[in-house]
Length: 330
Image (cartoon, rainbow, N blue to C red; front, side):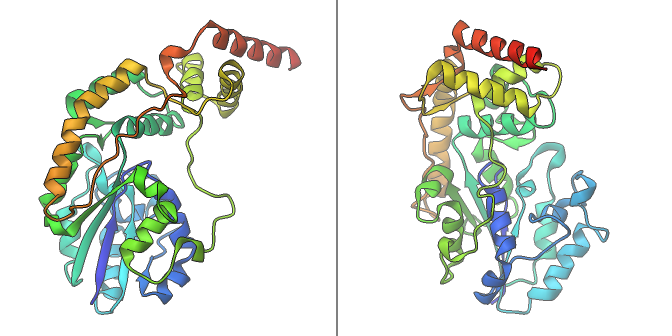
């Protein structure tokens, strides 16, 4: 029976790590009757959405997305293989939205088509999106992001009200064809995110059976609060990595051995928790008939977390002195 799985993200849920490891171990997966097609020069399958959404040239295929999807059908639909297609661009909304109905139609010769999607607690997801945006342009200020997330359920073309994401998916797929994965619990499980996806594929291979990447996890975000502080100084320019490193050193020098940090204030975290908790409970209830074990972790801050409102004059003086010394040293 031919089966195709669309791994749709979401963004910043270790998707790049899954893509890199599956691409790197495609032969081992193929031996277990799982195909991870190699499309173009990158490990992800972003090329499959280029006919519907703008993509950098490096992500595109000369023949286009529809032709690539049809080739996948030609190569695998009459086999007993499971095809795993992975791009977080499948889950975008707004102008970047992909026509999932047309994609399903193209893939209809497969016996089964499934959606799998990892979800992350909203404040973590929004923070990770902020850090990713910071690599390319100056992002909106955290209070503005929180306001948009609460009022619209969307930031930067990404769903943060996951009920709305489910609404879009259920326009095309039956509820039993959709699986949601909790990011926090998955990271804690055997083999982490990669192990979770291997278990979903139901193949006799574990995460530690795969050849690891030389540089470990991919696309790891920088220290959040240090990135925000560096953005504040670099405004309106894009923050250079050296400034983030300098701010990270200043943060550690000021607060010592802290567990983690966040770009948000304690009040903003509480506002998001108050707004999204009932929405997440609604999502769990909607999934219960077909996915009774699913839940979405709250992922609280923890006692030893530095929030934005905790940055004090000592930190800014320490960072200013480091910048001055760097200028003196030339």
